[in-house]
Image (cartoon, rainbow, N blue to C red; front, side, top):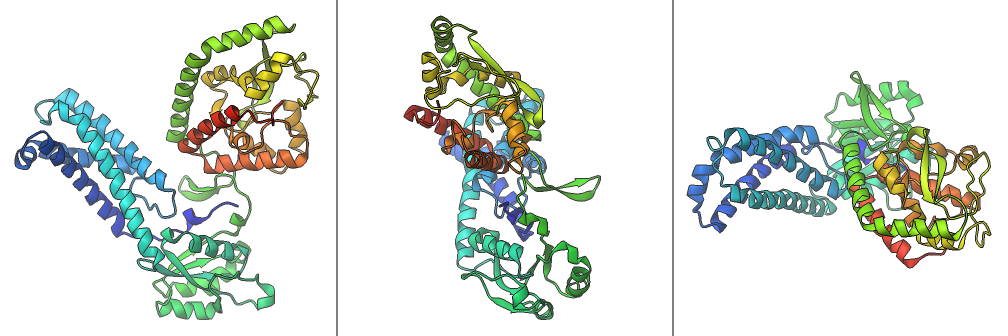
Length: 475
């Protein structure tokens, strides 16, 4: 089920200002520390480094508007916050390098030997103060400090899910104090134990907001009741100081990387979308190029030996190329070492099974160790595959399962991968039942929803462990 905390985070106007000031302080303290370690008194450092500090801080503030460093991070994963800080600081260093190239030594008087030291110390400081502030604020909120009282208008599945999300994520800073609904109990869902009880009707909610007993109100009433929302809630709550949020009821469905966007200023919500675009897409592509290049350098000679073994031990080509769906459902030719006596690529493709007599002796070893996938590194370099992503299926299997599994084709919203989340989660090899394929698709969708570079790296390392154990799930 898609998480909804990104749509319901309360805003705090003082926090971005404080973070900006703290970042400026980190830049200054880091440079003073480097100067002290190099035997230069703080006063002398300040005299020669005032311009670099303020200039770097200005560039940091400008770069932060592009990277979103000072946006509200409530509910976001911790690594996203500090990785964004490092990315923003890297942009500042690029700008500083350009300035030194054109204006040194007139404008920037920091010794060249200090630059690397300052970069490392400042980067550590930017990360450290965010980790500490997150920990301190989280501890306070778990003890009901620095939180806001929240009410949910609508006793329904979405309202319960929202309450559970807020209860399980105290870092969001919203503490649910009650549900409100005009409908009788027999027309509403049950409120699970551990959540606040039903507190009254919509009239009671409006009165609580007027008394400032609640500060946040989340409306989870179905969107089809638009007139009721406008008349009974929004018009009346406009006479209060409560912050009001509407949580659209389509978020109870399974969405793929849902996010807010706009079309020429008109707000819209993506329902089925890829997370890999813009800077994310560039970063993933760089990781693919670097990883594939390193892998080919390591496995180049073994691949040559494998090619010779395949050619000498059975008749047929060294490589097997099969048409499969790639990004956005476009057909691509995926390379593998040939492991069978046949090269099927038609409307009917039979999956390999245990003790399959079509598999050669060398092929059995290659399939068990996944070495047959190594030629797909060339697909990665060509740009039609990634190191990590949903495993591509034969066209015949795609056409078969897209009719049987809802949302099957959504796995093609990202490039197919040599390895994937499903494969390192125990769903590698033959899918001889519909349930196994459904589970694989479930993990493919989860990968797309939760994608990050760090997730890719974790999957790559876990793949090495899975192959090392030589699991008997592939044959």
